[in-house]
Image (cartoon, rainbow, N blue to C red; front, top):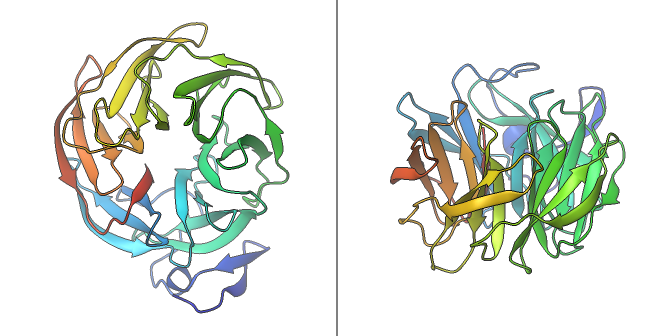
Length: 311
């Protein structure tokens, strides 16, 4: 790890570059993603990111450490429009973005936006033109236009009703947003306006919600999965049907019995495999046609309080 940040010119902007990223010998991808799929896991306590190769059977190995120099990485998300990996650094108040190399490392990392209090979740609309950042201790959600160079050109506080918001997810048509409201044990549903702002926020109707952290919509776009940080009491992950008006109903236990808590859920592109972080490790689960998780087992390594994961 660098004792001091090094500044370099990358993509025609002044970039904050961390030692491991700057010294990678792997080829840099300026567009697209690595030929071999990797997922990225934020390690809150270690201050870095774990990158794991995803094998044909869905297992994650080998895993490697990248993106060091962070002070409390919490959220990690790919913007599929520019293929940058974005990381919310909870302790510094910054959102960082990085290139992905062919070998799954993070390189040429830069600051997308600073000045948040404690940024948590990051999400993007379907076009990748607007980023949403939850600011946990500020009790706020911000929407931020994404500039061509990957930075956030400005961020505006938006939405109401949530308290200690951890993460946010948008539906397939970018008309509804779902925010996990940790202290109120609820999922807040907001309408998404044309300019990206949130309005008409209300309780989504989700049940069995206990200290929710993660919110994720499955690839079929018909179910919302909620990761409960409920201190060892099931259900750790629940899923709800997304109705036409955006409300949630028919919530039920996804069947994750091996975790002690949960922080995040993500899926492979086909929705047949789910990955769950439980703040100590990552589980790989098969996804049944009903939406339940089955055959969950640990996968990957080099995790230290993993709070989020993203392809």
